[in-house]
Length: 146
Picture 1 (spheres, rainbow, N blue to C red):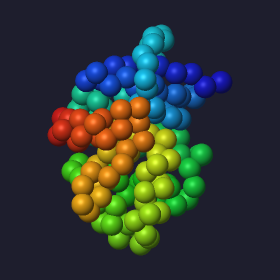
Picture 2: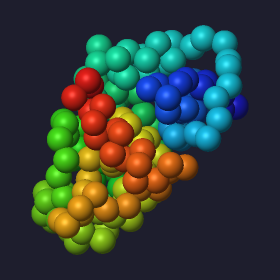
Picture 3: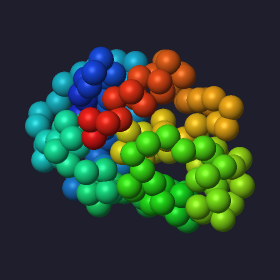
């Protein structure tokens, strides 16, 4: 049975779903709640505070519901720490920018897989979250603390 924990990070409510020892989904939530502590909560909190590198977080993610293409794109972002364009990420993965955009749209682990760092050639591009592009701007500003 899947469980959840909730945290508030820089005024961004986050819901983390997990099963056993793997994170199954991260959602930038419109609400916040409480649950008993779990080892994954400490790991995720360490990640958000900059004590655990992004690439180390990947071993705690459950990619079983992702397509092979999504896994490839997401894993190519392990060390990403500054904005790049959809085109640049597409070239890195030998694909089309629209395919990358679809992978970002279905990203089950925002913040860990930094879809907020993928931008359009002519601006920020979109962002599927309750606060939209305003949250994307905020996350980009917070990125150096990782």
